[in-house]
Length: 111
Image 1 (cartoon, one colour):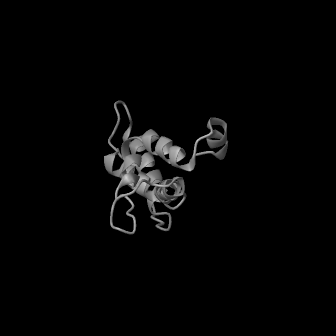
Image 2 (cartoon, rainbow, N blue to C red):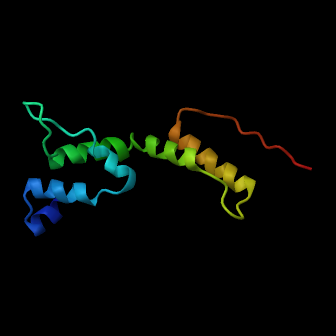
Image 3 (cartoon, rainbow, N blue to C red):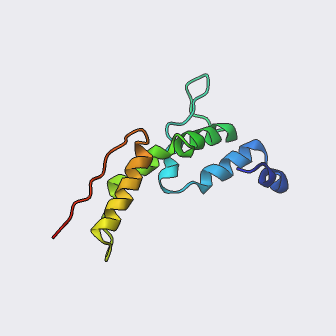
């Protein structure tokens, strides 16, 4: 959450955390589990810094691989998409998921 939004709306750190958590959608909601616990083992609300750290881990530069892998698993051929286009998109996703993997792609001529 941008600091300027917090300042303009005059949110407390707790209110900013609530606003951010309530704005999460779809797979981003998964960062809310497990909940943090206090010294007595009771669940407590997230702080804005905890939410930001979890989002950064999941969607930051290193965490994008998980997102790309999910896209790769769900990827299907679209209506009127050629096999070549599908193959190129899959190859791009594989490179994003496994950047150190350098596969040789061979072109096959189809008669």
